[in-house]
Length: 178
Length: 261
Image 1: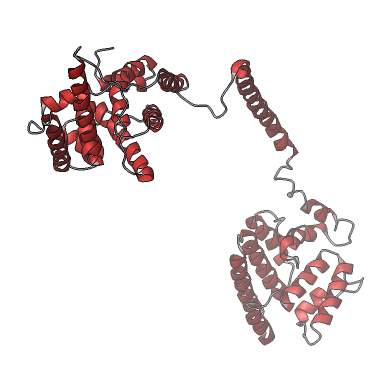
Image 2: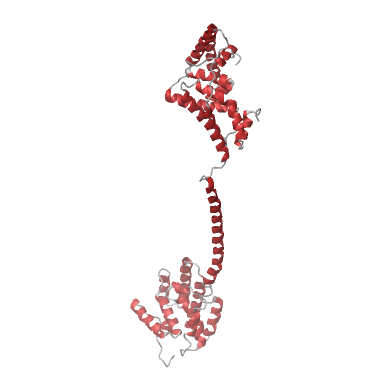
């Protein structure tokens, strides 16, 4: 069951296997949460949206059909909830200031440099236009292809590709500044 | 997509602090998922705890009620058939009319066929419904009498019999009007006096006609119901003061002296 594809797990859950949902949830919880959290500034709001997304999945249990990858469907739901949120509050990104960064180097100088590097990257990510940032997060966190990003965001593949390219270029610049 | 792929960007992104949903949030979502599976078909009223047996009891009560109502209906159906008066009930109705003229001085042989005819010519159309027997025997019954009557009377009787047969066969008001018209045409043939012809023509547009009233009075007279005939004749003369009754008809409608009868 743990190695079963997402679609098989969702089908099993639709058939009444609650354990299949547990596996599915464990597989996607971290990535989906980061996707939401890095799109929304406030953690409390991100948690609320995150819960609403999963509730939507649960509600659609009996009507779900494997028309596309489960991941695409899941992030489509997430995108729609984010759009609703943005319409109400405007575009924001979670603040990364104050976060404890992982330290790979025992040298305090390297540690400080790593913090600065990550801070610049986080700032660059936050500075991205919302749609470009969303395309990037869907690519990195959701593992969606360009076509799937287009499907999840209600646009075509060319538009998704363009947004992702712009986002990558800006983030690459931030990394190369190191 | 290969153009957009950059391992350094991806690596840097992975270096960002990992965020995870809280354990409480996980529990909330998983509990909701399990609840959804536990009640695949949401009932209209969610049974709770030990009150679940109410639903079984309710279903059993509905079943018993349905069976009881069905049995009750089955029992009532035969009773309804018994209490409903059978269709032959109207048939014996003419019998008292047959008995009625018996004490009269008139010969029984004459009375019976005339009595059978009487309901047909009742003034009220509704009174025609207790129909007499089939028309064919009526014609046979009238035939022996024709030998004893005058030619005019024989024609009259034949006309009455024909009309009675038509009335018995009538099924709708429209057919009734047609039959009346046909009967009046026959009457005009039987009594070719100018006044009778005129009345036959007008009878197509107005009923009852004076001729029919007279025929009904004649019927009453023949049945020996002289009192009713006298009343009807008086009523007729009130309604049609200027109507001149033909001699043949006058003999039939007016009371005859006791010696003549």
